[in-house]
Length: 218
Image (cartoon, rainbow, N blue to C red; front, top):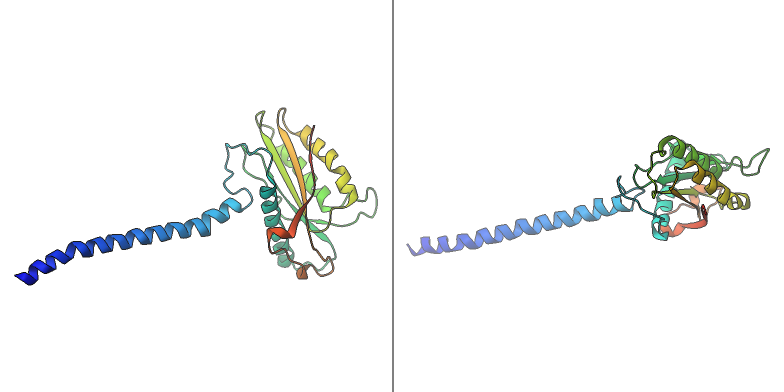
């Protein structure tokens, strides 16, 4: 009889210990989900930027993270196609707040132009053209007060011609946008890129990219 009462007294303690174990397990699983999935998603290009929100002008931290993600995308693309030419690659990301983010289908290559303007065939010029076509084709229904952020990344240092043209490019994009919509353009570059040995100078952290030039329409 005494042993039976002792057993009955132990059962509530066992249930309490089992309940505590499951609560602790749920907390650990939730923290793991936040660390491995939610934080990387928010840090990725467009992460957490679903429709219906107007982000305004991007902060320096947001620009750097996006440029870093684009830099890694370019590196992976070069490796995937086994690029052996001595050329530059660039990529871009566009966010319009009330619309889904936009990306080119693939990074754009860039090289010196044999004729015409020196930067006609640079990746930055090509990506500006992609951004212009995207605004004309997909963003004509944006309401007044919206913001379009366009970030262009290039592996090589931005040349003087592209730096000079940034304001003209921004004006073009602004004119293509609906009335009352503000356009911001940022061009980021890799801090250390060897065009002869691109696989020896990979970008491994956000510190491997830097802002080259930016523009906004008056």
